[in-house]
Amino acid sequence: MEKVLILGASGLVGRALLDEFRDGFDLYGTYSSTSTSLPEGKQFNLELQQTDELREVICTIKPDIVISCIRGEFEHQLTFHKELALELRGSSTHLYYFSTTNVFDGDYSKPHAETELPIAESDYGNFKIKCETMLKEILGERAIIIRIPAIWGKNSPRWNLFKESIKKNKVIDVYSNLVCNNLLDVQLAKQLRFIIKNKLKGIFHLVSEDMMTHGQFYEQIISAVASDTSLLRYRLFQDSAEICYFALKSNREDIPSSLQINNKEIISYLLG
Image (cartoon, rainbow, N blue to C red):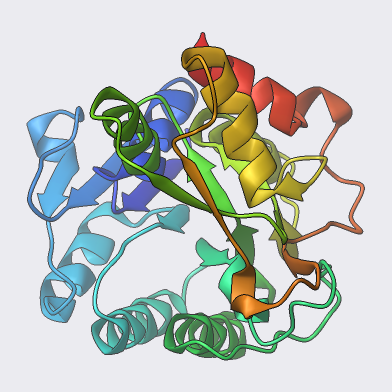
């Protein structure tokens, strides 16, 4: 049974991965402040600055697979992932690294595919590009890059914030001209399991099959839970009426249609 170490196992994505990977893998995880559902001997309290402890965890477990969905200060993350990659360099371990749509936030003119070179404007996007590049330089094809959009889940921070806003009649700002993707935490976990089981490599854009504007997505949710959409306050992204795309697309055909999801299904799941 393959050993899987999830870095950041107590977060939204990490929890979904634990649930999905519980059968068929020997699971281990790290956490910062909140412990996980793993047995005591299989979870480790680990901060980004604790690179010596990271190496100890790797040496103790000797994982076949490491999945990184850890969060934190950018420079600390960069150092942490470099030490991780160097520790894994002499092994056969595969590293699955979660990246983001923000690696393309320097170009809102179109959705971007896996084959395109990233171009970022934000500090976050540039940090993710640096991390992707560094991991691929050290680990080669054993570094698999998973780029994701906004992740929703029944216990996700953005869903909880939305419900709280509805409850308190607070205005929700949305963009009428920003086209986006979305994805569920549980669907992401299923797709990653497929990628790992089938030993797929390279860069993956794991996103909803379709796109809609930020405003349309919220409209469809709020119309199902409230009498009207008056709580939505529409804004123009970048103060321009031009359509902008904060979206990924995929040119790959690895992921079967049975594991794909669209925005309507995402909304139905959240409301179910």
